[in-house]
Length: 238
Image (cartoon, rainbow, N blue to C red; front, side, top):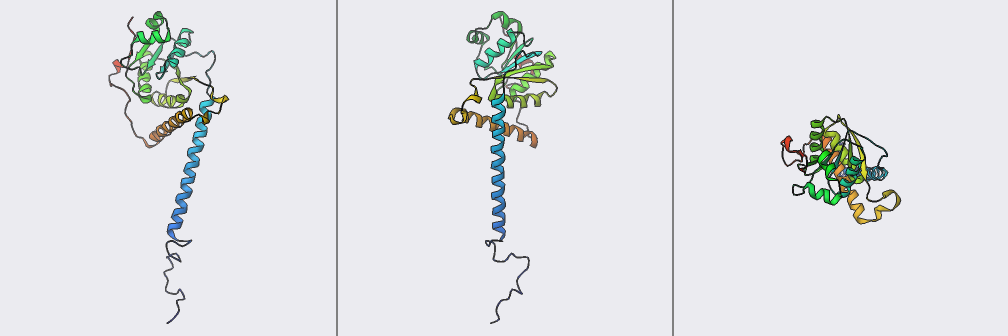
């Protein structure tokens, strides 16, 4: 029998088969592992950027704008927005995304706000069901009043996504962030607290999804209970 000297081997076929050191499967596996490591590094690096951006947010001093909007999610946000309105930081306030069962009287009672202030300069939006809806509800309100600059009041961890959606819905308006800071994340190891870390990770994931949505060009709906623009915001009844 004549020994195999490799003369009849297909030169296009990697020596040793698919599972050899130079085989196609190992080559593919290495590429998949490298891509996975790179993806993890990008996601982790993005979260560090997000966390730094959130913890660095501070409420500006002496800021003024044409109007003020607050995205519901806690009465502390509304209290701060009403305080800004009372101090003359804006001409009018929109409370966006209030639950349909919440009355102006309930908001006034919890926040201890002046009934005259509500009657004069506060609108309540009941249409938004999520942050996208907040942005669309606010954009309609801005358009109706012709405002050019608006203070945005929401929690610090929620601010980046809120600004992203607002600028997407209304790129012509200047949105000025006024973050509500429940606790100073720059002065404690917040990443050791499960609830805070869970909130930050969840919000970062939503920011990533919103960015991917815009890159891909997917529409996720208006986030509004009704498409009728006349029902977006209502002036509280006395």
